[in-house]
Length: 314
Image (tube, rainbow, N blue to C red; front, top):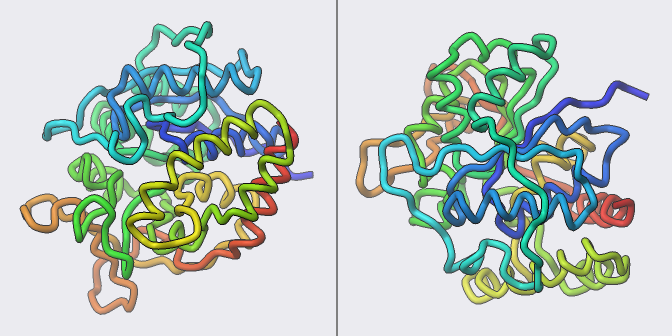
């Protein structure tokens, strides 16, 4: 068996963030989760930090350390998405307040210290929300960039456009300046844009398979998805909503489920109309540096088979 992949999950939970975290929890043979860092995004930081603790507790993971991070974007007021995720970010199930506690260290300090102390090229950053924590760490400690093995991010859009504005996907839109810093950092990056996540619909038959697992985390996840998907079903007219964030963890576990290519990606920060747009040079029409592996296709059945199999292990 190959060595475990050391990861930090940087997140703003979010129901689909919960699915990604559960997928990591269900894959202890492949994944060594060094810590969870939280950022303001889907809901404010107080909720995203609380939610991360709730998810650890729900899965009986007291050993997983949670670090609260940045409570606002680098240069802009915070935009949140309660209209999608509900007031708490994990609306749907009845969830008790956490008894687990946050770590006293700031998330950015934890990221910097971990990347400096672990062997160079051994830690993967898995980003499920706005990139504020990562950009802040890079600004404060530029020496960490070459130490990152890979950064796998959910964010951006190409032919699918945006989901918060016509041009921008939410995670990038919330803090485009942070995304620009990360994209330009030289870290090897894999991007999971809406083009991939919109292929992964929480159809009724898939949710029924998850419910059949019967465990507390699986039932909570089903109740979260039933709440979360109502917004997308109304918007897209689909059977179920797209499941965005678990693509990041699934890619580490089974990269063969995904297909894409390395191309140049730039982040728009100046335009009022297209702020947060990921300008993806898919056809290599410029000579700009190819800096991101952009994923365009996924084996949806294989993805949900993996998700359900791993949820059953928690």
